[in-house]
Image (cartoon, rainbow, N blue to C red; front, side):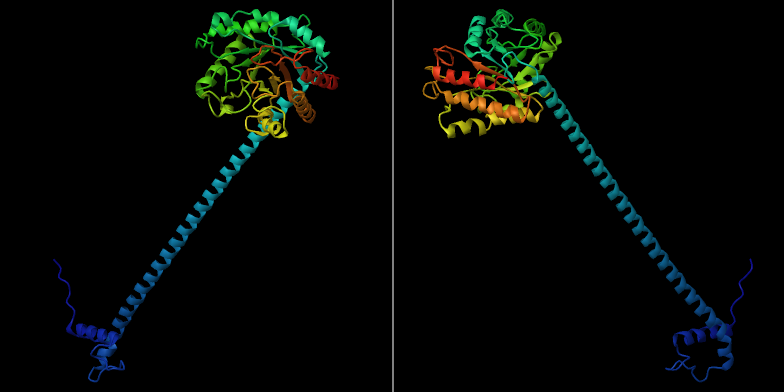
Length: 420
């Protein structure tokens, strides 16, 4: 084994001396001048060693500086990368937001186009000529008597464009009895006139009806009028087909429409609440019962009662309140659908005597003025109008030469004035 060569004593002494010189050790005085007694040869010999130590110290400082510079550069690069990532995320978010906005705009444009198309179609349909000469289909309920319908037309001086009927509601056997097919007058033409039938979603015995029965009902209605109007589940917010559970009611409504249209594809479905808020424990949000894509017409039932059309304040309330005339008219138009008055009339019967206007011509004056204004402003927006010409005392709604004569006279004059 080769042994390391030892440093000489002179070298060690020189190194110690140099260390003192570099750090101001014992071989220098306070001014850094070599102390007396240090041999010149030692000082001379120490110069290379001092240079070595100084170079090493300088190199170490340079390396430290380079490391710091490198770290700063790395930090700067990381910050730049983070900023780029943040900018990219911001750009992506902006792009996503722009895409979402564009999609919403496109959807809104599509909805507007569909609404415009529906309104155009309604206007085109409404542009057809009605036998009465009225700007809409104008007729009524005549107590399921074709003879009464004919006499009414003669009395008012204009044919009736529509006839309203009701199925028997006791059970499904009764509901499928199509005795109501004979209630239209001999002048009725399915290609021109409207057969309007009122159908409950459940019969009085609580039965929803199986699929074949609904298909058969659709077939029998279409036999009278292929594009008949069906007031399905009418007055659901008060009187018939009670909507106590919105989801259940909508499901049954949709089911009935789907099944009837399998045998009678051209049937027109009418969503027809009673004027005013929900009653008798029915769903408070009446509009929530509407089923998109299953309805062709929005209609309203309203009479001269609660409160009667005898003061301007009463009249205004019928039009401006929630679930009033304006509300349902706008509800229809916002969905591109036409509006209708499916039941309306004065009332002088004992059933509503404390809350009705009796033989009140003002009711018809206000009603037909409003209808004409809506039709003029938005052609085709009024689809049909059906006066409820019921003579029974519970209603006392019939107008004729002998019943509610003042109101009847006003009605006749209004019809004459609106006919083309």
